[in-house]
Structure formats: C-alpha cells, structure tokens
Image 1 (spheres, rainbow, N blue to C red):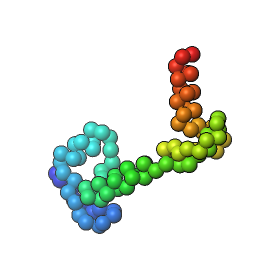
Image 2 (cartoon, helix red, strand yellow):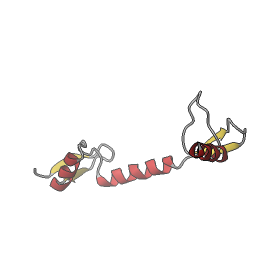
Image 3 (cartoon, rainbow, N blue to C red):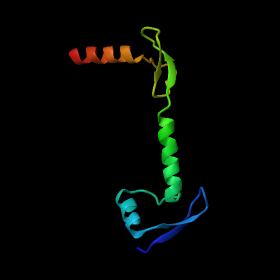
Image 4 (tube, helix red, strand yellow):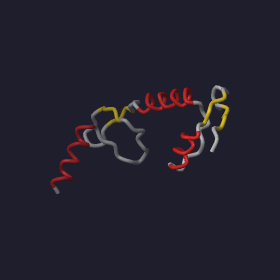
Length: 94
C-alpha cells in the first residue's frame, strides 16, 4: 500500500495517510481520516472540553439542586450525587 494524499475537509490542506496508518485503520476497521492530524487534534480537544460540561438538575428524591455530567432525559428520574450513592450502596447490600 503506498502513502495516500488526502485533502482535509476542515482546513483544505493535503496530508499524507501513510502506509503504517492505513494498516492501523484497516486492523481497527476504521474509515480513512477526513481531517489532517492537526485538525483531528483540535476536534478531539473540543470534544474533551464539551464532555466536561455539567447539567443542572433537581433531585427527584430529595429536591436538592445539583449538577450531573450527562443530559437528563425527560420522563427518567435523576438523582443528586448523595442520593445516587445511597441508592447504589443499598443495592449492593441487597
């Protein structure tokens, strides 16, 4: 497999998709990259920053205001950290 030149969909620069990278992507059953290594790094950094966001909730058990690291779904109960930990410890005992 020779190296492949691919245009980045984000910055439009041409980057090399090396033979070694192609083997790794093939082994992991991945599609070839669409972004250059620099843009991939920036995108990964953004995703990591967004994953650190918290969502305000009101605990369905005690009514306390808290923040959770996931988007609560309508119709599903959500617990503050204290009530969640208490329910987990009760589940382990049972």
